[in-house]
Image (cartoon, rainbow, N blue to C red):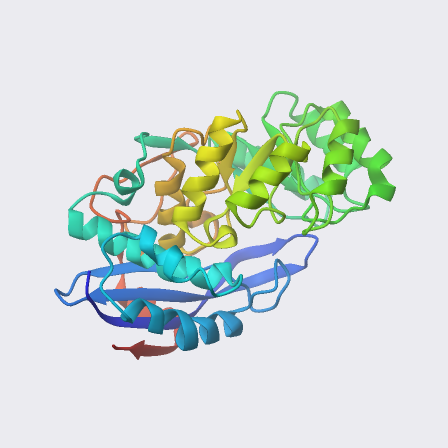
Length: 369
């Protein structure tokens, strides 16, 4: 693949409703949309999932733009690319900045699949024709509001409910959810809001037959998580702590978790995601795909990744209409009875809508060799 141009677009899309976690409340999603064009005019698309401020990790939109513009894009233009796996090796000497790396690598993967005239799912080695999905529910103003939302999403067929928790919004809330919905697949996501001093509080969550507690402790920890997992019946799922296949290996060896959430941006791309998936499969550690409030482009990448065999738990890839009045792809992602049909069209399987993209674009820049 000889690349002809790379365009970065600074995007802003308004969320249909506020989304609150232990980090804060989001009213809109600012992100970078990446378009890579080859010399034959074929385009690959992806997006950076970094936020405007370093809430989730150290990356931001501004740092992503800088790293892509000044370091990563020049590396992509150096020589032709035979396979997307080469991209992560080409970027390897640049420390961290995984979300910036993943955005460019993802667009190369889409371009590669289109040039091969196959779907991105097939290019990755995916096996499924449909994937089960759940929903992620932010912290609400009241338990009543939370219960109403869960009731709505259960009626829409979503297969799993993920409820955000934090100190002061945890045990009593989950108790009421379980009382109202005794049979649903239910998990809690703490986004690193607790410490080992609150282990006894976390142990109270064992009473509610949860699928997992996601990332209860610090975002850079695997040691205390191992200690906590030994005290809990409920499986711990690691999210923010896993940035590479090496992190996953160490967490598995320490017993820090029983489940891993793979987010493409967090681990640096689809190639690294596949490596983590394969390692976890070897150790009987189930994985699932987490969400980062993606537009339809990022959502399409998540769908393709989730077709791999060890994604055995419903992920966060909800319908476009869950977050947006208008998405930037055609058709939009839809969910029927908790299932997304995997598109068979080449590449990501959805067509970026340039009119919608232009509507949400704040700034753009095109780079050439």
